[in-house]
Length: 158
Image (cartoon, rainbow, N blue to C red; front, top):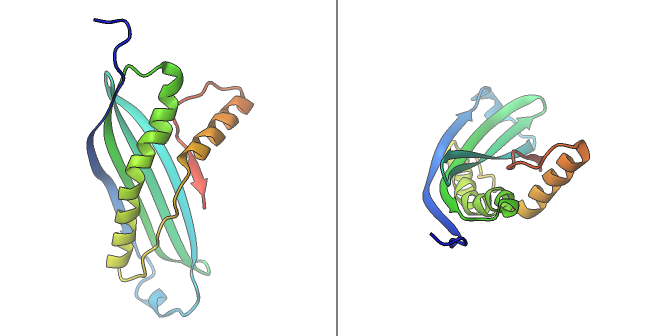
């Protein structure tokens, strides 16, 4: 085996890991004429599955309210299994925290818009996300707190 093996980055599988929709105040809330307030939270997690195999998941939580009553709440977790080998340790965080979520996110956006539309509401289109900036922000926060950098587990409000 050579000392410098070629880097490997392959998508093994993409899948919708979890999806939930709640409309706790239907049907009465559907008669409201007010514009709803939409809160979107994102989280990225990464877990090793086996040697050189990682599961990376991006979770979106979309909570839409009219005043203090929930119109709908959607939580979707889109995941991917990635084979990542022979990447320098100092670059692994960026691969797992930036490259993988960028691949997963379009699937998540489509699934969220689809389930909201199927529930009878106009689709909520998640904005494009700069995962590089999200990752750098998390690294800066960890450095400020004095903790060692890890794979992302970031939550961001939009």
